[in-house]
Length: 165
Image (tube, rainbow, N blue to C red; front, top):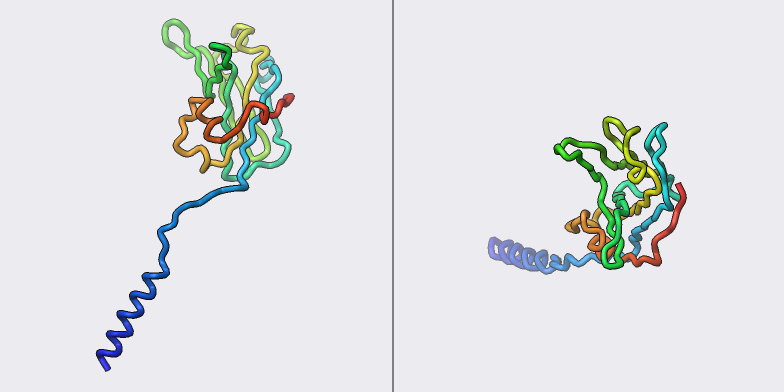
């Protein structure tokens, strides 16, 4: 009897081991990243804030990244990842661009001690890109590097949606 139980136990162990798999490959074919580009927006003295409401609610697991157009180099736009802080010559903070988001909207704002004296070049006619992306797609990508983010998301320039605030 002991030999039969031992034999059944050994056979059972081998059969359970054959049910395991080492295939960890996961392909997500239905996840879509969205990039919005604002037309020129201005931060007005009343709140120094602009808000964009998403056309539809984003998923809880989505992340929002915001970039500001800061210039061009060799014909390529330069995008700075927010928050973006500017300093006085003595090293103290002058002002910052920052943002927050919910599932419904994104808010971009200026913060600093005396925004009323801020040069118009930093307050008026700013262009931003708002990138809505599932968090798992952006893992391990340098978010400070806009071209790397776009390459990881496989988003082309012609897929970017132009929006008004």
